Image (cartoon, rainbow, N blue to C red; front, side):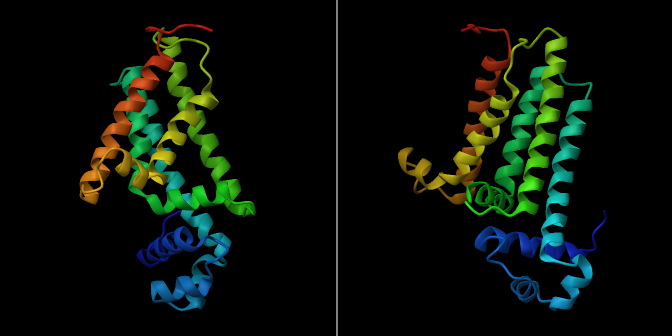
Amino acid sequence: MEYSAKQLQIIEVAERLFSQKGFAGTSVRDIAQEADVNVSMISYYFGSKEKLIEALFEIRMSESRSRLETLVQSEDLNPIQKINMLIDNAIDRLMGNQCFHNIMLREQLSSERTPVISDHIRNLKLRNLELMQQLVREGQEAGVFRKNIDMSLMSTTLYGTINYAIATQEFYRKINDLENMEEEEFQKYLRKRLSQHLKSLFKSTVTNEHHIEN
């Protein structure tokens, strides 16, 4: 679905407020006030707060799906290059939009989950896993990747590592003596370290090189 500039503005404001205050803690009036529109305009465009967050997930899922599908279909990259790009895409997506990351993390850690958000998160995870499986299957068929790869743990390792790094940035700064580093420089540094670590980890996990079976 195509959204107008005004709709996109409302969605971006809602995303920021949902990140800060939670879905339940954010009212349509809060969003209207922050977006400098009246409540009836939000109702006209989206119908409800649930439909508004549905639009947000639709946009973010579409962005993610488009990038991953382009990667899967590429004929110019070998399997390990595709895995490396998958890792960098995941890092860029999660670190580049920490408001959306916070919404997902808050929902998954909450004892009182919002069904509409939980459903979207599950669909997003399933789609990402499906595309990751396609990449791995391609490497297996080429004889580059080993056969018995636990895809659920591979996905958990990728997204769990990035999520934890985002959630504990201040701690990472402290233990690595980076507290005086400028924020922009630190974000670049953290992305680079995550990229190097995950690529090394995934290479040893999926390829036949130096792998020891239990």
